[in-house]
Image 1: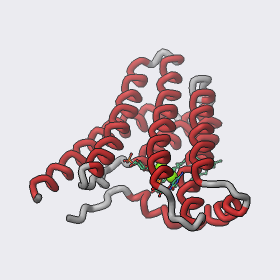
Image 2: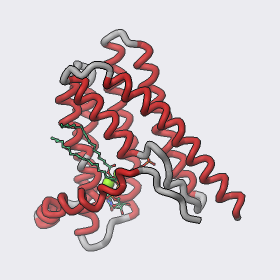
Image 3: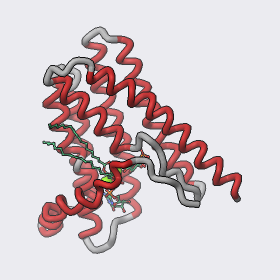
Image 4: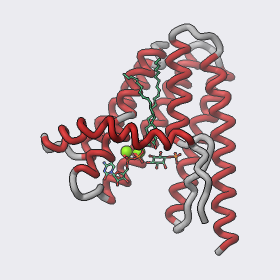
Length: 207
Ligand SMILES: CCCCCCCC/C=C\CCCCCCCC(=O)OC[C@H](COP(=O)(O)OP(=O)(O)OC[C@H]1O[C@@H](n2ccc(N)nc2=O)[C@H](O)[C@@H]1O)OC(=O)CCCCCCC/C=C\CCCCCCCC
Ligand SMILES: O=P([O-])([O-])O[C@@H]1[C@@H](O)[C@H](O)[C@@H](O)[C@H](O)[C@@H]1O
Ligand SMILES: [Mg+2]
Ligand SMILES: [Mg+2]
């Protein structure tokens, strides 16, 4: 059964791939493989999220993190240009390290809220972190069972764009944008968990 793809950012993927292809080709030409790109992207994201955000450097944090999360598109480009179309180990590493990067981004924001004595927003951001992890787990578990759960309002690109744009503009002084972004993301992530559970349930009923 086909499912509607509600996550609109997926439409940007071909364009982003085209933009990153010359860089990917240069990396392949220098013998740099996809796993190195995945590892550097994750390390850069973790270090910048846990450095900039807790210090209140939201704009710089968002910009530097953006640079490193784009490595997640670049690693796939490098894998495909490498000629073998990607490896099983690389696919596992990519998805697993995505969880590490996501945890660091939201942990950095939680530490920022704790440092500014905003316990409520720290809790809302914790919901974003937990629900986002469950969203990814639901898909991985479904795929492990031979099903799909490739649906939802707040898939990873949406979660990253909302969090990073809100942090970026909050750092520039736009009022309320970070709390509003985190509240919206918490609600959208919880809804996405529900959407994936329903999608898997429907497939099990059809079998
Ligand atoms: C200095 C910074 C300037 C800021 C400029 C902002 C530019 C960004 C603008 C827009 C971003 C647009 C978002 C793009 C959406 C893309 C949609 C999408 O689907 O993305 C998914 C991916 C990656 O998914 P995945 O990892 O699954 O795919 P891969 O292509 O990697 O393929 C996986 C397969 O590849 C093989 N493989 C992989 C790795 C490996 N080691 N070995 C392998 O073999 C294997 O077969 C695998 O199965 O991307 C993402 O999730 C990342 C999304 C990035 C979102 C960025 C958000 C930033 C937006 C704004 C930031 C705030 C800045 C505000 C600026 C304001 C200015 C006024
Ligand atoms: O499920 P989700 O968190 O929305 O989306 C995620 C993808 O964007 C990511 O690229 C992949 O490696 C993860 O395993 C996960 O599926
Ligand atoms: Mg990737
Ligand atoms: Mg990924």
